[in-house]
Image (cartoon, rainbow, N blue to C red; front, side, top):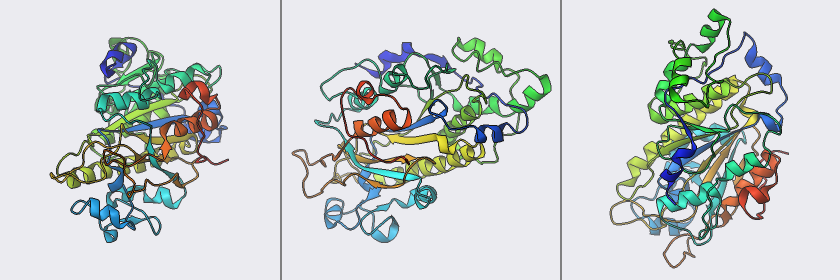
Length: 400
């Protein structure tokens, strides 16, 4: 089953303005409103191509790491040390304040049994929460929505995929693809002034699931030159995607109607088969600076405590570097979970570099469906059995 086969399940919105602004003081009103389950937001960040976990969260105290990576291994004095065993790649420094405030959880060794090393098949497994030999047509987020996320709330859309030209079944038919976040940001800049000038609601949200030309017409008057936010967003594709996500959060209505509970962003490619060091460093810098800006913007909106940000990727990289100064397709890798409701720290067990599998890949220690189980049960309050297609122990990375 190919990812493009699911394109017909989505409405496509290019350059649509989703921002619905409010009267003065609306941000304070949002902040004061109780953060019930139906108000919660999940932002997924796909590290497209397979992120190298060993050079992201580095086991610098393990000499085997440097034996396996004699030229691309990162020296201890070049790392952001988290404890006496592991450190973050230095280009993740913009995320370090999250760690210091206990708002960053790192789940180690995330993978699944009998890992598939095909980009397309493995990301499909992550999106559908299936077994390696199981083919499912609906995504885990789709099943969560069917299980009752938000109760009786009628969301404007169940999800928005931002800057993703190729996406699979992660979110179902009640989702929107925002292929051009740059156009979206440009069209969203002065929505508050537009509404105040016309004394009418922004119709873009109402038209969100209609055809592209209708949404474009609704967005015609929303051009301007000033962000709603004090936050300065990074430049580039991922920075614009982060800005678009923040604008969508800003569009959530103060009452309990409308809104978008799930967004998915993409960053990549992390498929670093050769000359990995520079490429990988640049991507991690984009990730960290984008997440830092996202936190800043959502804090302005009073929404950080009701937002959960999670990374995912089809697989990690092989433990041993290759002859081209890169790494080939591997298995498990660490993943980041961030938010004001997150209990920061290290979770799970780091893979043992002395015990690689028959293909010289690390052996996973945490099933990715344990993370989805936690989101289903503790974040959304729905049964995880249907969402993840099985029973898995959760991980206590959310504050009680």
